[in-house]
Image: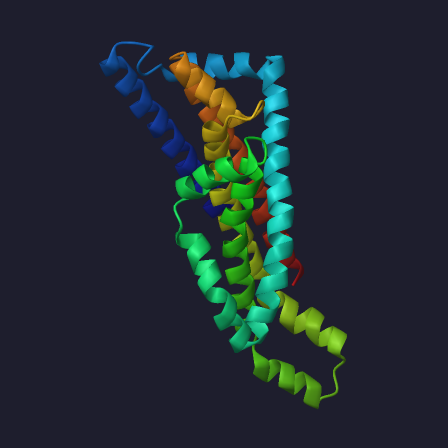
Length: 250
């Protein structure tokens, strides 16, 4: 098993190295750091950006917007998802709204939000509209996929409701929740940064990207992009780690 894990890690590292090699080749063909900066120069820019005061402020604002949107989204997802998964009529009532939110282009939502809310609230609003329908749908699907035969069997043998909930219902639903959270956060972080790019709040990673684009600072733009990818990866890793620990406990 350890050899298999090590092999997978080596393949992943090889893929990353291949990506940087392709990047280096493209930068050499471009022939200009102003068009496609080399990986090493971009790495130096990332290190420099980390040392700037504005970096930490922008990072904190973007993460706080993402977490605020996530908390509100998951609360709404449970409020809508649980009754939707438990009752077919409620599911049919709310499903058109969830489908509409999932299908509407993010750019349309952002432009409307700029008109309605002003610049500072746009990223949070977009985060909610992006993450909420994904998690609500997964929660509803998880509840509908609970094995009712096991629950009925538990009741027949006189097993307490709390134990049925703890050992049958929750373990069946958790994989759907973690999958929904992982997908929602992946889409959510991208939507938040797009919202910041267009709405231009005072602080944020998207604001820094837009500023770099205006002044044709390509290496800084790519550096902020890599930072955004890293944030998304860290939060997805946290979700996956929690999921693996729960499965191990189960």
